[in-house]
Image (tube, rainbow, N blue to C red):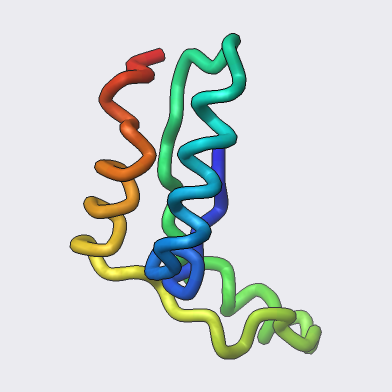
Length: 78
């Protein structure tokens, strides 16, 4: 699994290097793109803890789709 904030998903260099790395691993059976989300942000705020990724934004559905295509997710059905 790969945690993917929008800044990484939109980086073509990151996607190409990740795709190459995945292809080099002969035992990979499944690849998923897990987009960053802010669903747990309220917990940090409620606990009064500084959130470590204040500027991270979730990727768009289009960015996730493009990352899945480049990483060839369909080739690894699990």
